[in-house]
Length: 482
View (cartoon, rainbow, N blue to C red):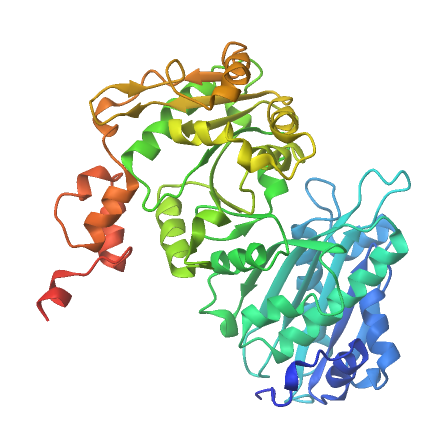
């Protein structure tokens, strides 16, 4: 049974929380359970307060005691409770109970759902602000399989009570959006912040699944999180799914490569491989605890002032095909990227980059907003155990620019020398000479203009994907003939 969307947000009015909860409660077909652990029953409280809750809420519960929680949902292998695995077990258990206890023949038109969250709010010392997993598994037609929306949030407020209230608002927005905006997932995402401010919480991971979200690309939804200012960075794994950055980066050695990757070329992969070989030989670097991240900044995704989402998808597809983990960030400056990584690890970090990127780092214009200017930025960039691996640039006359002869602004010469001769900048010397003349912009131009000869400049398999998917303006021969 399709749910009517009529009347939602007419004249751009944002429905109140009571209006949202009441609309759910007054829909005679929506029926399910609430299971909330860690911050009180803040979401279900909105629905009880709105009135008419008996037609919607089959059960509401909180299993605060760990033994009770384990008895109901099982014991996690890692012993933790605020995890995605825990949330999924909660949803599995609660939906199973609904299906067993509510006979479908008796409720032929009911749209069953289970909303769950497992969170930890700010600690007493206010050192850790808290985070949580929130999700809903639900139907939009009684005879259809379940759909699912799972998200991870980080609290920003410094008061546990305020965090609890924030969670209740988010949960209400999620349930309302799941039922009344499922066919417009980008709007659903934005509406999660109805009656909330981005200073209250951050959503850094979200995944959609199920029959109504078959056409939703979760990597594209990741981009929306960054684009909408809901988070500073999102990450997705080679299988195309969004992944929680903390899970990937926690206590790891990190080697990051920033680029446009438009498209990814052999020189990008040579830079990665050679810098990686150097990085894992460093002191305090454990290869088994090392994570490589290919990072694309949002500023590199813009075309004529707007983000070209298809262009983003093309780059992401190619990097994933090469088995890489990708980070999409809002960090124009490198020091912000390093600060971001520092949230998750104190282990050694490395940045692999080309000459032009390093020259940009020493450009003062990027740091005018800082009271301490470039010195403040460099303090944040290099005070951690970080090293830059510099890939050489081939000049038009065939000579090479390396860390020994690159030119920075005269005012920056002594600063550059300080970091260079303290071992913070090292040259990649074992590079593949045959790749030095490859530039992404050249390859992109050749592809879009239908020129021959670009395929050998790309890693194995990438050219085939570009042709099969007609990426970056590539037009198949049959299209050109027609």
